[in-house]
Length: 168
Image (cartoon, rainbow, N blue to C red; front, side, top):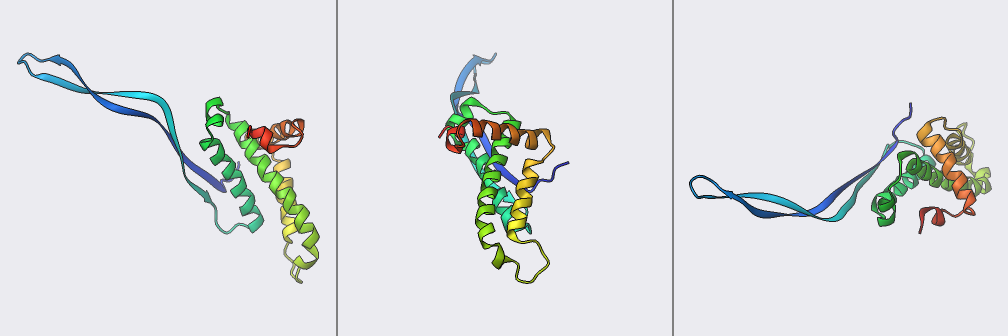
């Protein structure tokens, strides 16, 4: 199974107002009022928090933040909400964004990898970034792994533009 390392907490509710409506008079002549809720068709969406598991390597934490921020974008962007998106597609795009971030980290950290070791036997930030990127590419899950690979094919078909993919 997969491990939850991050979470985007959001809520949505339809906007409406209570309107008192007179329904009938009872046997003794008293008016009975009931509340009716009339919705105006709009939906209010909020992102309340992005939670990240503590104690993870910095590079992994950053990639999780990127992933969760794309979830927040989907929750808050009006066009994304109108079209609707299935879970596999949403997770795939979020994984794609994290993968692209890690790719940039790999490029940047490869230049600095000589200074990173410091005589210790632990993996360098470059090696960790490479591993986390590899993990996304080789995830076997239907939602995250297949979702990522589908999002990557679309991204590449759009000329490598995340902005175009997200409809910005």
